[in-house]
Image (cartoon, rainbow, N blue to C red; front, side, top):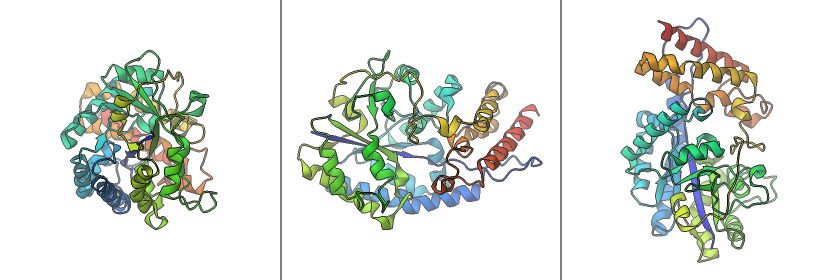
Length: 391
């Protein structure tokens, strides 16, 4: 038996407007651009892909199941700019076949800089998921699947049953990601590891005409999933939800691929099924322990944090941001805190990444002309926030 565990990340940051060193406007975020992007992605991805999932759940009478994590920032923007998207997620929740995971409300890197702020953001997110979808999350996923032993230990004390990880090869060693594991020093917690090869076949290679498996069909993936039998029992397909319609446009066939995939997986073997993360850890026992002392992520071949904290600009911006935490919380100004937390979103630091700037695809994710422009713009905003705090 191979149990497919689909997990999708849904996130939209609040993008900053152009902000000069002479600017004094307290409105840092580009409302027009944020609304435009949210509605565009809603039309290309969220609404059509949610319809495909809902149809598949009904067609297969509840045997098809998936999981999502929606950041608080994405949910705020759905409420403001695309309420139909939020309604479609609530309709999916109503099927009983969709699990919503917990994470940090602001999609931040706070675990690395402030455990207190980490807890606040997670608890805020947990309350939001309960309010909107009627679920109390049992499974945690960190921003960009950033993970190590310390995080697992901390999360276990927050009451979660399981945590997701990027499943970096150097952490796994000879072991397969197709089993349930446990982290050291947190024996009740279960660890679900991303199957990078098959996940990336969908997320990154699907529309690549130079790829040897192009065109990649639902039948091909189903055959690969079936080969997990004998070498594991879970196939964890973790990816950005924008894979479906945004990163790969609808005319590539990606939405039809998603539509036919459940039927193909269950057709190739009637023993194959789909489980949510909490169902997977309820059904299968861990086979061993995975020790991950250093921080890993699901990003880039290195599976490290260099996309967000790999150069001097990123390090400086992050340290200056978290220096403000204590004074801001003492001041207890709700608007100042809200702006500061929106500035903690990992995207702002990703835009400062220099290692892949020559890659046209990497540049397409940034609203800036260069990482240096991103850094200057961000620091101008942060300087104004500091001035407001002093005032």
